[in-house]
Amino acid sequence: MLILDDNDTRNALPFPGLIAALRAMFISGCAAPPRHHHDVQVPGEPNGTLLLMPAWLPGRYMGLKQVSVFPGNAARGLPSIFGSYLLSSAVTGELLAIIDGGELTARRTAAASALAASCLARKDASVMLMTGTGRLSANLIEAHKSVLPLRKVFVWGRDPDKAAAIARHAETLGLEAIATGDLEAAARQADLISCATLSTQPLIHGDWLKPGAHLDLVGAFKPTMRETDDRCVSRATCFVDTRAGALSEGGDVVQAIAAGVITADSIAADLAELARGDHPGRTDEGEITLFKSVGASLEDLAGAIFAFEQTNREASDEL
Image (tube, rainbow, N blue to C red):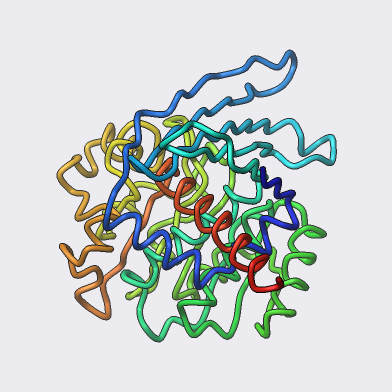
């Protein structure tokens, strides 16, 4: 049985190959029952969340991810997200691999956003704003750089030291990186705005968006959370990773629908339709686009299979 820790998992999931694996899985599809989503009470702190996400490809692989999201961990100096992925044979049920769930989640989430951006962002997008400084932020910058000609990135977070650390990492990728405290000024310059926070109040305002901007909304995975205001949603052509997930859990979409700003029918396409070419994606250089993701077990399965097969292939090559 293969065991991949966080470093092994990171090395087994290079973004170009991972993005291609996600595109192929969104095109082909897999069995993906609804995920289990449970609030876990933490006395004196915000609730934690337990997610159980199964998926399988008949006759090939099946997998289950357990993820915990505990916002109070920030005060402990711990990551907000922990998890493990179990990959098994879908023929025998034999356990094949245990993969670090936090790293898998971070990289497949960033890869899904980059896949969407390859269809929705302007092809000449060069300036990015990364809103948030958690585990996902560095991955989102790297993933988007693999599909867009980025040259500059602003990093904003409530903790200036964390923003500076993410900016230093971005510089190692060959980007001009600036940790900023002026979110509005950065947003007004950005071709791509990526948000990965646990905010319950809008951070990005629609009047800040320049023509042609692309919004990548990764945080706000509960209906009570949001990262953008209604003006952002009303100005944008809206896309989602999956309709079922976004309409039940994506706070930016759910709250905009509740306010009457958009309807469920306002969602132009999901990621499968974009990957298959059923929807052309961006249709105008001045169009503002919005992609809301809440995660899908299909993405985890695609990433786990890619990591497993990539690791076995590299091991075989060394023999």
